Length: 260
Image 1 (tube, rainbow, N blue to C red):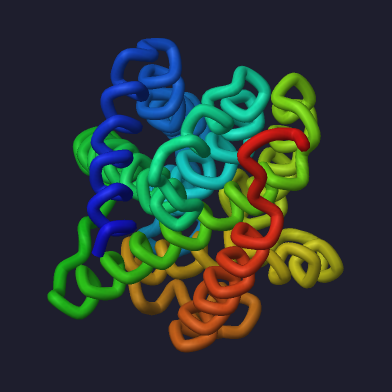
Image 2 (cartoon, rainbow, N blue to C red):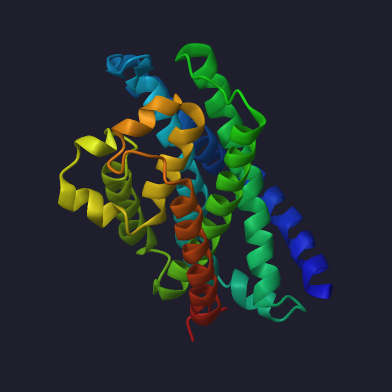
């Protein structure tokens, strides 16, 4: 309970620090909306009966937003905090690594909710995004968001423990995330990619998150366009849970308060 209380308190501080960094707020929350506006305005063709590319792209951007807000931001920011001594100062407090992880998870979840809400509103108003029409779809959307947010958080913390310096973090993390977005069905229709690229993307959680979000926002018959011919909901949940467990173990093992 003490670790939980400290984690909640740390989460409140993390949110305040995030809101004070205006550039980070604008980039984190508005950049996905800007991408949606650009790609949605340029590519208006139908990729299936009743499904436009912009609708497909919104689903991919919602999933990608979970990875950007959690994995990318944490894997870059935590090494910077380690370099400037912020983590070393926290080590002298009663905060445990678990409390620190919990505080970061709160920040990611709050920022992710704001980003997803903006994407849904913008997509529905300007690109004819169909919001879930049943309770089951909303429930599926909820557990996808929770599992996606949690797994991206612990994986970002795990990678941050491996990266040696904050200066080199963006050069390591950003290209990796961009490549994942291109091969996981965010910017292109996943079934149109080469088979070897589909197989490689299937190792990582972003591919399964994008597929899960398509099952929420696209018509049920679009599942026939997927490589497996179905949404594979059970497999999506299993893969995300595996990554969540693996990421948590890696984060605990690799986390360091300082370089030494």
